[in-house]
Picture 1: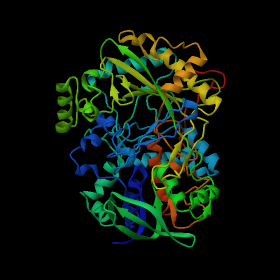
Picture 2: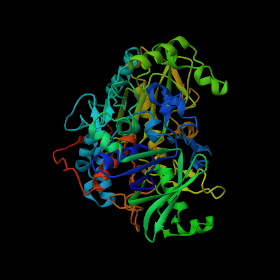
Picture 3: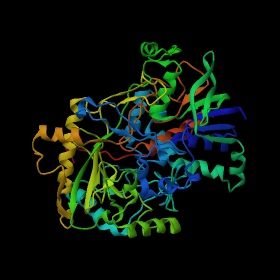
Length: 578
């Protein structure tokens, strides 16, 4: 079939949501195109589905675009890794499964930035609830019957040290947070994760797509008849009829080309890297740059690929006396592709893997980011701007566990002021684009990261960790924590991306408040690229909410705002850091 109501380019976090809603609730025919694979057809499906196996795909190009940034001027010229999902589910099949909505004031800011009150918190909360099926059931802030499975998990062997992290936050003077995605984000407590009751990763492919591809109800069977999913197919050319996009040219893995037509819309869900690249390849972007690339200019839209934002984070690591993931996760390094499989204690790894495969339980049925925290880095911040993910293990080079007991806090500021770009590579226009987040380009970002590091050390040195703490591992004893220059230098050399690229086709700049491309008909963008600014935390949950909300907008519908929804704001935030 070559004609559809909608063609969706990208079966990622947003694309799977749209495909589900448009077929099941709107009765539209949908062609969903994905450049990556269907991992369920492969022997290594467990690398995606097993929560504890999340590092396997971060440096493996089979399910991952495996991008890198250009050399970063303010990080001593380092090129940072940027994994992006190349598989059904996109980055929701690759990420760390942290379910974080951000703060209510993020969406109040969105409403002001876009000039549209319908992106305010009380308008988006109903869509967070619509998407969610929380294991704790429904409440004013949680959803109970949506497709997206969200849970909290506690691995029994790691609970003492996880509890110590939460207790350390309280001892340092911060509050407890019962639900970081509810009324109060600020504080320390358990984290939500996109892991289902069966112990498997709850990606958007798992939650939105598989129920239609493997229907068990009459309603899902009807929707399945309207949905066509094609993997390993690339779209680099859109088909225009004047100012209207009417289809796309696609090429499959064997080089065959297809002309595919959409009677209603083509929807780009290719992410913060892929969506602006596709626009620029089709002559929509900065006219001067496109002309220099030899691309015929279709529309001068200079904000395409601009406003790139990402979270930058670092790891504060301690060696421990006991209680960590080392006996389960540490491998023998230095042996290339074999190393990830050469566990130092293989009997533990095999037992954990088999327990997950047979029962959906055990040490492999969690992402191990079971606790975390949100704090404000300085007075004058009305809501948290520093996030923590705690894990009972030390990771070296982002991927390998240190072969010793240890623990670390992933720490980063959440509302950086630095802005970057996505640009085409003149040497290969259709190849990986030039990703330049421009980290730490402002003095404010440098100072915020410095403050965050010192606050983190204060937390990890609390009495709660006395039972576990052996010694500080990174930054090591040679770094003078009291010296701004020394701290700044360490951050430049040791920071990593949070993998939260966003905002490159922002609402109000490139698309309108419903994702429609400015100046054109028949085309819409729905993914993290249309965020006007980053939310305070991981971006997968906001991306799913955004897709749910625009799916309704595409049908001229909208859930009523929750006018009773409130949020916590400390009364002394203008003068006190905590």
